[in-house]
Amino acid sequence: MAQKIKNIKLYKNDLPLNVTFKGSIAIDTETMGLNINNDRLCLVQISDKEGNSHIVQFIKNCYDAPNLRKILEDKNILKIFHYARFDIAVIKKNLGIMCESIYCTKIASKLARTFTDRHGLKDLCKDLLKIDINKQNQTSDWGHDSLTESQLEYAANDVIYLHEIKNKLDKIIKREGKEYLAQACFKFLPTRAEFDLLGWQEKDIFQHK
Image 1 (spheres, rainbow, N blue to C red):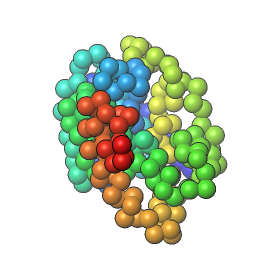
Image 2 (image 1 turned 90 degrees about the vertical axis):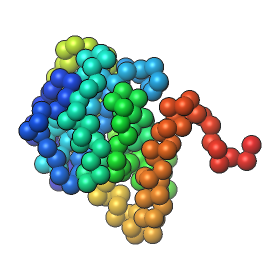
Image 3 (image 1 turned 30 degrees about the vertical axis):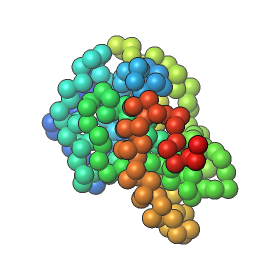
Image 4 (image 1 turned 120 degrees about the vertical axis):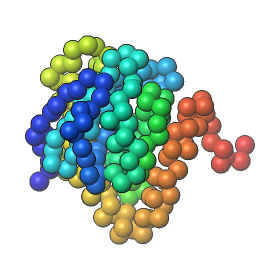
C-alpha cells in the first residue's frame, strides 16, 4: 500500500533543532522558475519513511538555515530526489552547500524502465504505485508569503512517495544488473550540478564535437 501524507509541518527559513532524521529522507525543492542561476529557492520539502512532511519556506535572501544544511551535508543520510541534478544545484546556489549521499529516481527510472520514455514523477507514481497525483500547482507562485493548503499538499506529494518508488526501481535495477551504473551516475551528480551552475547546462563534454 502506498504511503499517505500523515502530517505536514511548515517552518520559516530553517528546520527546528528537534527535527532529526536517520537512514534516508526524500527531498525536493520549489523555486520561482527553472533557471538555477536566476530563480530563487522558495521551499525545501523533506519526507521521512513514516509519511511525515517537513517544509521549509525561505524568505527572500534568508538562507542561513544551519540545521537544514547540517542534514543535507550528512553523508549518513541518503537523500532521495526526483531529478536530483536540478535540486542539488539550486541548493548549492542558495544554501552554499553540496548535498552528500544522493539517489535520483529519475535516473533510476531511465536505467530500469528502458521500455518507456515516461520518467516523470507523475508517471512513476501511476505506473509503480497505482496513484494519480495532482500536478496542478506545479507552476504556482512559490515565492508568495502565504502558501495555500493546495500548495502545501502539492509540495508534500512531491516527496511522500519517493521512498516507495526507490524500492520498486531498485528491484528492477538489481534484476537487470545495473546497480553499478546507477551508483556511478549518482556519484557524478554533484559534478554535473557544478557544470550547470557554470552555465554548461546544454554542453556535453563527452561528445565528439
